[in-house]
Length: 395
Image 1 (cartoon, one colour):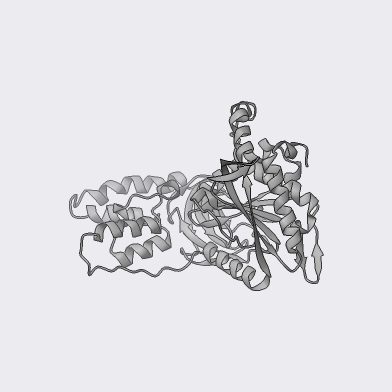
Image 2: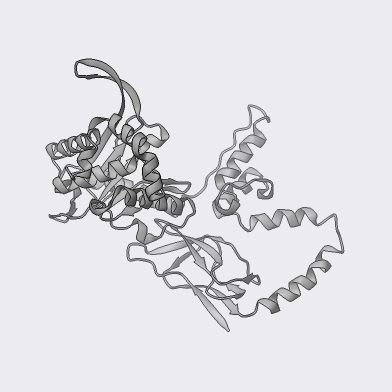
C-alpha cells in the first residue's frame, strides 16, 4: 500500500520550510521512524521520519525545494522491503564483476555526495574538492560547508601567493531569519544598554563547597547559568516592566518568567525557553539547560522549544567576550549579557584584593523601560549574585 510522507504541521509563525538533505534515495528500503530528510525552517532543522517500513517509491521534491505544512513530499510502498531488497542484492555482483578497476573511483565518489548538504556540495564544486576525500564533522559524520572550505584551504596552502580562492553560497534559512530579526530589532526598538559588574567570589565558593553534593543529589553539575537564571527570574518579579513587551499602543506584562537561554550551534544562535523559572529549583534549571544543549548539538530542538520567551540571557563569556551590547529579541524588551570572568583588583573593606569579576550588560527597549528601571534591575541581580543565599529566599 502506498503511504504518503507529508511535511509536519508547521506553527503559524513558520510559513514554509526548505528540504535541506535527503538521507534516502528513491528505491531504497526504509524502516519505521528512520530519518528520511532534514527540513530547514526559519528557526530549527526538523527531521522527518518514515511512518512505516517499506521502500521509498518516489521523492516529489529535490533538495533546496520550498515546501509547506502538510504537503506530500514522498511516497513509501509499505511492506515492500523484501521485494525491493532482493533484486538489489542479486544485481550487485553483476554491476561490480565486468570491470573491477575502472569504475572504482566513480563508485567511491558518488556515494558520499548523496549525503552532502547543498551548501557543502556547492562549495565542493566551486573549489574542486571531492567530498569523498573529506572527513565530516557534522551530525552523523555529515560533511559540512566548513569541512569543504577548510579542506580546500589546506590543499591549496602551498600553491603560492597567486592562489586567492573565493566562494559565494546562499544563506541558510535559519541564518537569513536571524539576520531579518536582528534588523527588525535594530529598526523597531529604541535600544539602549546599561552596564554593571559583579563579584562572583561567593558564587564560586558555593559551587566549590556544594558542587559535589549537588551533583550526587541531582545527577547534574552545578553551573553558573542556574545562578544567573534564578537571579534574573527573581529580579523580573520585582521589576515587571523588564519582563513586559510592546503590543501596539499597549504594554503587555507577563507575571511569569519564561527565560530564553542563548545556545550556539553550527547553524547559528538559537534560544530555547526555560518556562516558569521563578518556580524552578537550581537542579531544574541545570537539567533544562543541559537538555536543551544536547538537543541543540543533535539537531533535535523543536519549534515548541523556541517559542514564547519573555526575557533572554546570553553568555558571550564562554567564547572569551569581556564586554558586549547584546541585541534585544522582539517581542521581548530586554536581554541580559554575561561575559568572561576575569580576576581584577577591587577595593574591599579598604583593602585592594583580587576578585573574580564579570561585566553584566542589559540591553532594553527604551520605549517602555527607563534607565532607572534597567539600572535597578542590574543592581538587583548584582546583589543576589554577590549574596547567593538571597536567591534561596527569593530576595
